[in-house]
Amino acid sequence: MGAPLKRSPYLVLLSRDHHEGLLICWKIREGIALGIAQERLRSFLVTVFPRKIFPHFSLEEQFLLPLLQPENPMRVRVEQEHLAMRQMLANLEEQSAKGYGAQEALIDALDRHIRFEEREFFPYLESNLPARQLEQVARTLEPHHTPGEFPWNDPFWVRNKG
Image (cartoon, rainbow, N blue to C red; front, side, top):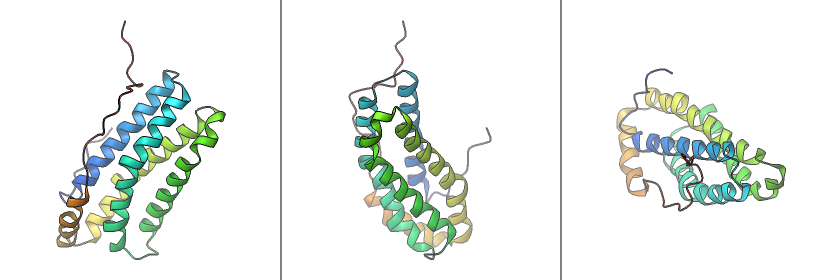
């Protein structure tokens, strides 16, 4: 593993969301490793995505993507991946009879997407947009951002020690 990426202070709120997203991926992977019932994992995903992941997507779509031309490959990829994960979540219930595959696919897609944004998309924005433009985005975005985890009363990812 390399050194942590230095993030523009103007994108740090969104980077914190990415950290939370990776934690969600870890929790689901732990649940799968522990053999947790698919319904418990599905319930977590259908709660967490609309409350944490999709609002983050909406912020990016509202405040970051319009800074790029519609045909910009970075913008196109972000839009396509957001749409794909929304569809994957919508299809999660009908896929649940097929084992953990649909949950793993959704989490893998989220993990790849977050890493793409952190390693490629955000650095692209930082290199290609003026700092004052990113600063304006940060000021406009901040009042719409809802940080922190939501209460979840089923810590299925916790391994019993004993």
